[in-house]
Image (cartoon, rainbow, N blue to C red; front, side):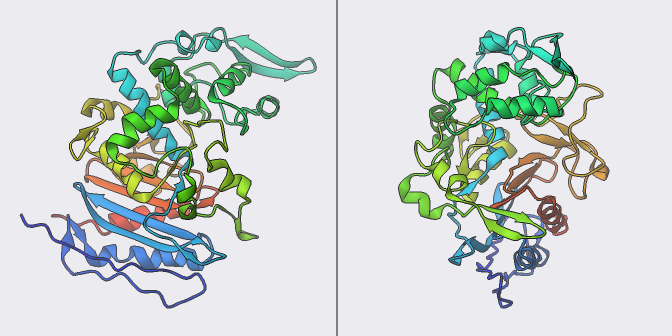
Length: 421
């Protein structure tokens, strides 16, 4: 069967201008897509930029291993009107988690540990942890953990660790510990975390937090390598992810997108260098955050997503086994434990190892398939892999906080273009 080619004209979208070059689509389908319907992505992304909600957006869609749509819109920097280029470098924040998850699973495949090993076997400070019970006149009251935190707990976020505590009392303890300060190493962060009571008994609830950062330290201890070196040698190098890492070399800083925050009252506001460029300079931040520290490009992260979508292998390079990917992408939460409602107020999502997985499409915000999986980042980046449709969707952008609107719209625009082959 001949491959059908579809060329989309690159549009540089100006937030203040109405005249933007529209994508040109041929009437033929590409890998089961209607090209005319895929062309609807452009105007919708342009509108988000025109409304001042996003500085720039990159959208990539692939099916059956072939890229069907890839386009950038808007700016890498609004003030200078620097167009968002195909090689733009983004802060992927929590989309670092699946990378760390892959690193952990590589070591699991090598027999270096088992999922239900107590974390204390490798990180001794996890022995004899305390669990928050209440706060009274005499301060925080704790009880002993009923069982030890396991590697499985860390992978599925049921360890009782948080990003800032689940009560005012715990929030104060997290704030005082300054777990992720720029001068803190990964080893020091873990030691500090062990001094704070767990939010709940291990395995009893789901809480989004520093579990994956702790896994980053686990990778270091078990492998004997710093996390950045392990990822470069075992993941980024083999996958040819040439622009992905914890730091941006000086010669590439010009490609790093400007970090923006958004609020309804103030619109887009550029963040200071301390929250933007400075922390990504080599040596600018000692903490190799396995939960949120990476930068990457659309083409690089697509390589990772394609590896996950293709059962652990891409272009003849195998990172993980197919059954390991299945293990990562199935719901791993115990009965009665549900995560925060990622994907919709009604839930519908379970959580695998470092990623969410759709369990009930009707309870999510719209399109998808049972078993599709992926994750997002604080700067509104996200990716989704749909094994049923053999589909990968990747959106890269650079504004906080993480925005659900772009996820819902992007998924709708991609799935409505999907036709029968």
